[in-house]
Image 1 (tube, helix red, strand yellow):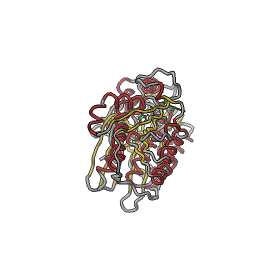
Image 2: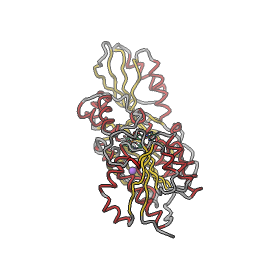
Image 3: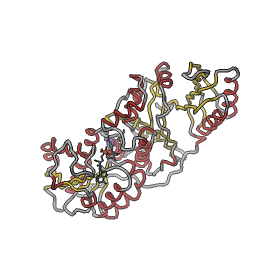
Image 4: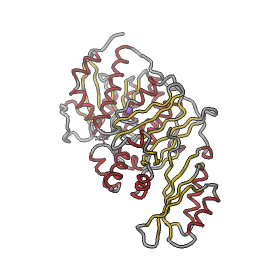
Length: 435
Ligand SMILES: NC(=O)C1=CN([C@@H]2O[C@H](COP(=O)(O)OP(=O)(O)OC[C@H]3O[C@@H](n4cnc5c(N)ncnc54)[C@H](O)[C@@H]3O)[C@@H](O)[C@H]2O)C=CC1
Ligand SMILES: N[C@@H](CC=O)C(=O)O
Ligand code: NA
């Protein structure tokens, strides 16, 4: 097998992440090249606007408007897809894999939607697909699950997988700001997706959870089969309750697998985590993931989950693996065997819940609420009444004893129908699964 002394890299999409990859390959070139034993040639990059000012110097001849021309260029060895989205990004990825190339991607939305097609194309045409940057930015969680923890089966994986949401929740809690103000800053810092609804409505976390579930259990869980809730309903009232009662609120992905049935369930929701837990103290743009394996026990990973530098670190680690693969042959990284696991029914997803309701401040309201919850087989553990910002209204915070997802959802719909309940009830899970 002949080895390549120069590796030609094509970067499709020279935005936040693409420029980070360019910048750090250039700035760490000496160390990287000596570690890998090759010259890394940043050969071409595709952009949407040739004239746009960038933070990295790229010669005019290296730039193109057509990412597909990079994907199919015979001189390019490694194609980095850093465009985002699922249309053009899919065309570029599939075209490069069909040309037998190695693709490095940060695109969790693409992988979640088209994972089976991408892996099949890589297998069929002898190419490879690397995706470390797609989950938890700079944390090497893909490598940890695929290689470091290969001996294990995983009954529980849970974590903070979205840097933007964690940044927003942290600053809301510390500074009393509302989420749209902080979201704007998260965008400026390069943390948020081009469509920020993906972040704050929980879909980006769901895409990442789907990838982790595939690595851990070999099964693709589409987002339609998950429970997905974002952080847009969280207000200072919820954060005050959390602070006063020894909790932090985090947007968590939770992936469970039942040992006896093999059923898998993936959910994404804001969660009250006791402050004594490590993940409750993972703040700002940091992500944190707890992985419990049947052999290793619990392992926890923390690092920056979004932003130019940590994401570039993950992309460059994939480029390094791709170089090793290209020059030393197929080291055959362990792959999950694709299966079709059944999903745990909602009746078996249980937990404790926090419910905040805006109610009319009038006699008999509590009795109606108690009757609605009891009618759905949900038993209340505590009730707290707070003043509301709305005249003639009160804010009620209930916590429940153990209940199941099906019952709590029925409770919320029943409460919404009560004339004394104003607006949308806010439901937050209480993390009793966390250790
Ligand atoms: N920003 C972050 O912290 C992280 C981003 N990611 C993922 O990395 C990917 C890239 O994200 P960012 O760099 O943040 O996005 P971005 O929006 O800053 O960059 C994307 C680039 O692709 C270019 N592009 C879009 N359409 C194009 C077209 N038709 N032809 C050529 N170029 C085109 C855009 O001009 C832009 O410069 C996305 O999949 C994102 O989900 C993953 C982890 C972290
Ligand atoms: N928008 C994402 C970027 C990284 O995946 C996030 O905030 O985590
Ligand atoms: Na990662």
